[in-house]
Image (cartoon, rainbow, N blue to C red; front, side):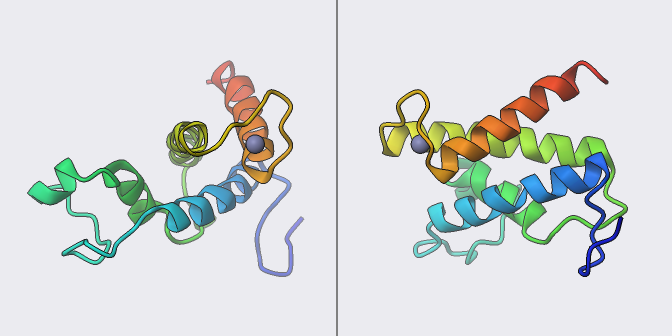
Length: 124
Ligand SMILES: [Zn+2]
């Protein structure tokens, strides 16, 4: 089935693409480009990027700023999701106390993403 925006949601790829919406927003909100001399354009060769505390998040954002196209290979989507889940998890643990069973957006997303990544691991 194709949605009005042309997105396939009945496929695994479509599902993962949907899951990537939340970390895109979350990471975009977390990362602070005020002091960035590249204005948020990640450069793997740049010395500042290598030592930046936002390095991994910024790198992710640069690769995933746009919604993945229909031709994006599933392994790429899964790998983007895995990286995002690790980042969101470590950030959320640092900034707030999320008790077990917490039902904030971040925890709900993390539960859904982790569940997907767990089941997917056995299929590849
Ligand atoms: Zn929470």
